Image 1 (cartoon, rainbow, N blue to C red):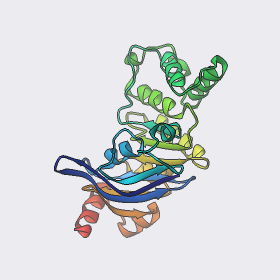
Image 2: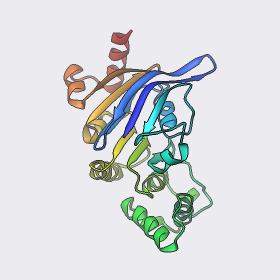
Image 3: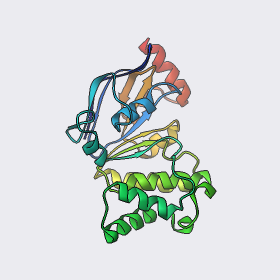
Image 4: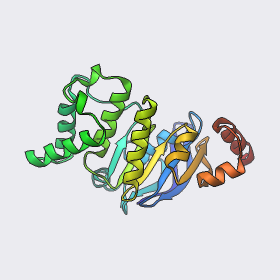
Length: 240
């Protein structure tokens, strides 16, 4: 579903992503890990078409992101970091707006998609509140709802459980697992517990390069007992 080949993204003389190559199949939940500034969010922004690559290629469901960005965006649900939204809108107004942008023009179809997204993310109790009045956890749920609204085959989630309490984290992880059989999922996280709970693959990136691509079980076996920051340090040193 996702093919990333030789991806490079530079900002002036700074190379944020440096020759990254990987693929994600339907049914994969890929955990994208790395220390701050490693290139995770930049890679995800290029995959979603938010940023143009400096070199290399990205295809989503066989479609080149740079050649047909609109078609690829139809196939992607994207939750960016901090879940930005229009604070003056109510939850229902915002999701109706997103549904309209996504092309659901018929009223019945639009309402059905909005209700489905609200139900999946348990937003019923705050649907009439303006987004600016919501807690961080609920704002995160609203961001997740907009990513799911059009039922895309690919989900790109940047810190999807950020700001959620333990029960909410469990709900989101359960939802991701339930949907994964029909979708390709990439999620970035700094929580090792999250990787163990839902991911079947782990890519660790450091200084713009992939230093590890394996299952969570193999990562734990090789770095038994290590904390995530220690795993980052060990892998970076071994790569150097």
